[in-house]
Image 1 (cartoon, rainbow, N blue to C red):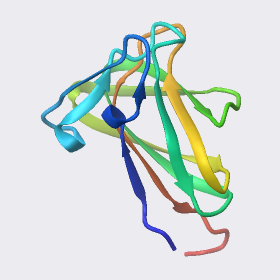
Image 2 (image 1 turned 45 degrees about the vertical axis):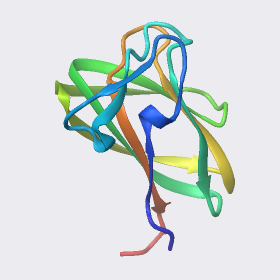
Image 3 (image 1 turned 180 degrees about the horizontal axis):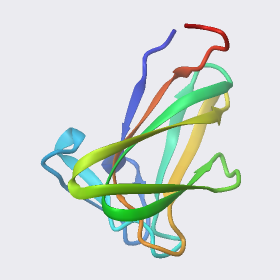
Amino acid sequence: MSPAVTYEAEAATLAGSVTAGFSNYSSGLSKAGNIGAGAANNVTFSNVTVPSSGTYQLEIDYQTSGQRSYFLTINDGAPTELDLNGSSFDDPAVTIIPVQLNAGVNTIQIGNPTGFAPDLDRIVVAPPVREGSN
């Protein structure tokens, strides 16, 4: 089984108003901020590579004070809204969701076309979930 792979937000493609900035508590001491409030203001991970098609665990490490949401798009599919909450733009919070990925290279885009989104530290893609395994 392959190990989890980490993708830093500040190393992804930052579009529109999104900027990379110092963050003392983020992995790599940096995060992506100013995400959302327009469809062009997003973070795109264009090199998410997995060995086989299936359900993977996607960990999203984010920072927000109060409620904000991301719209998550995988491989040009329909966006999924993730309602998130947090207490600080410093300390990362974590959410983990199951996602369908294709064998080979996948694209994951995170943004919010209408509202401000949380800052983004990183994503982590973990090995597929095996049915019936403990």
